[in-house]
Length: 84
Image 1 (tube, rainbow, N blue to C red):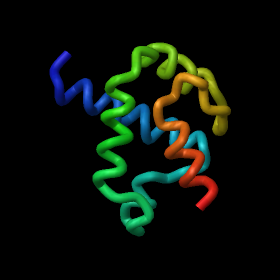
Image 2: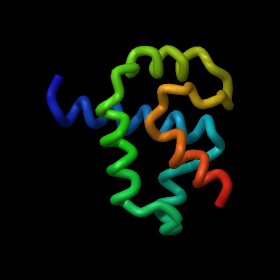
Image 3: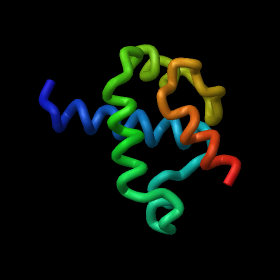
């Protein structure tokens, strides 16, 4: 898998997981509530995760909302964005 396609996969996972937490990261970036740097760091954290397949399965099988899995490296970010 190339770097670009791997990064695209994890970008989609971050956006999907955030969406399931009630967060529209793309909209939040447009409003400057989330910086491009914060988003890139979230994708970097996701790229380093060893649970990619579990995450994909969870997102594919879950409904419109889901509890963050314990292994999610972006849990703190999502939690802080929900509370702000």
